[in-house]
Length: 108
Ligand code: SF4
Image (tube, rainbow, N blue to C red; front, side, top):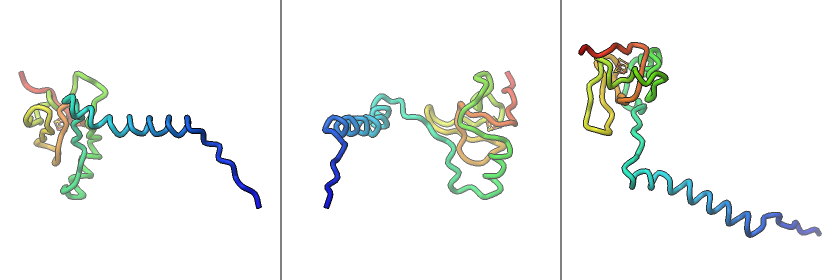
């Protein structure tokens, strides 16, 4: 009968636990600092056609062009600060820093 010798050292185990603790604490720290990331990509409650429309227009919570965001699109309806807004074209929540193919500059 042979016994298997563990190759995990105490240091390896402690380092792993520390890294895990830091990763678990990040969302809490972000929230405590008021930097909780706003996520507006939840499609719960939307119909299949509404979800398809978001995909067809490549809606994203981010933009490749900082000059073109939902917040400066004429179809965007803002909500309170740091909250998801809405759009007259796409159903569901819309990120102020998001973008889709139907972006249209706000009239000035
Ligand atoms: Fe954002 Fe597109 Fe709606 Fe304009 S049309 S607010 S870019 S989702």
